Image (tube, rainbow, N blue to C red; front, side, top):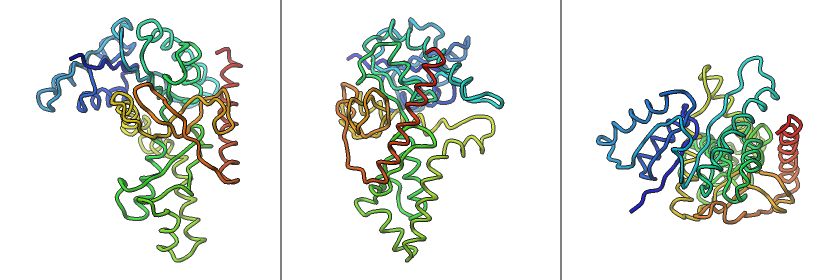
Amino acid sequence: MRRNKIALIGGGQIGGVLAQLTALRQLGDVVLFDIVQDFPQGKALDLAEAAKIDGFDGRVTGTNDYSDITGADMVIITAGLPRKPGMSRDDLLVTNAKIMQNVAENVKQYAPDAIVIVISNPLDAMVTLFRKVSGFPHHKVIGQAGVLDSSRFATFIAWELGVSVKDINAMVLGGHGDTMVPLVRYANVNGIPVMELLERKYKDAAKAKEVMTAMVERTKMAGGEVVKLLKTGSAFYSPASAAIQMAEAILFDEKRVLPVCAYLNGEFNVSGYYVGVPAVLGANGIEKILELTLDAEEQALMDNSVKAVTELVADMERLGF
């Protein structure tokens, strides 16, 4: 029986964790690509030598040659540089757009039938650019952001309430940045509204709202909080785990409802842009966008987030991409 072939573009911290999780969960054979000579080969060899210990059979190989991703069923892209001191937003956009343009051209050539998950930042622009350059169907090009942001939101809620994070249902919509929209009204603990539990805990509606506002703000700034603590890098465990959850939903045709960066064609009153929304993920990639009713405040926040996405894409186009 043929195993799935999963190509990971970018062998850095996220790419390494992706390779390990893919192997451990028996999702398929892994091809880890990076432009640095011998680097992905070293990571792949290290991981392959753990197969006996960890009990997986999938092959793990490293390469500097795009032709080795030929026929991949899924491609997960982490390639790109983090923002460095003194680097402007435009500098970062240009640098990573050039990288993504090259990645898209090669994926189009060697893995034209793959479903693609993009993690690279700035996410909303990079997934848009990949789709534009590759010409892939919109439903087969997906950005990873909402799963990660929603997990962060759920984590903070679980800590605050002293309950298992497995019982938290929380969702974050919109762009992957400061304007993201954690949906407070829909957050619940196995059906019990989080705000109701906070009000019981503090016996004060104003205090409960204050605590929730702090969690929302922490969610929005969570990536930056990790960067500040690490000092020499950015988050890699959680983004990789989020992408793997999406990959499993697609490879196993699970029909999971997950918040992902998806191309909208009228949904949520947005057309022609990739924005974070709830979607059904299955064998065909994004199989359906699930719309939900937003109140006036939520809609205003969503509109503001969409505006930020459109401005980011406009900046990218202004810079020639």
